[in-house]
Image (cartoon, rainbow, N blue to C red; front, side):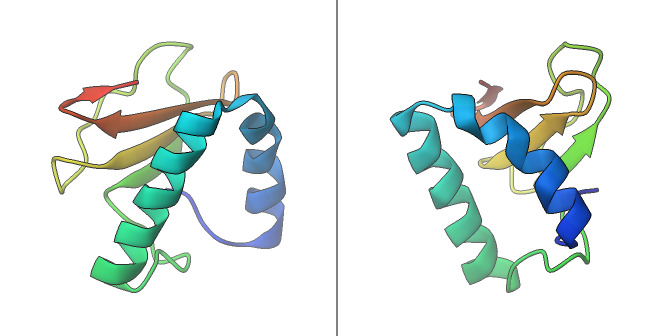
Length: 88
């Protein structure tokens, strides 16, 4: 699970430089939804935000909300966003 501690944030931030403006908007929307619906992840973990070694492939889980999610592949720092029923 992703956490909000300083070292995790630095490690995960390295992959955000490659996001397009449209991907940034989706990421911001995801974060706002989490804050509104669950008070933010705050390190407590969330079923809609996970990091893991997906071996360069698509994440193998579906967000609990079924609508929005984010995953970071620790094998290559790729950020995956779940929306419209699929990982992008």
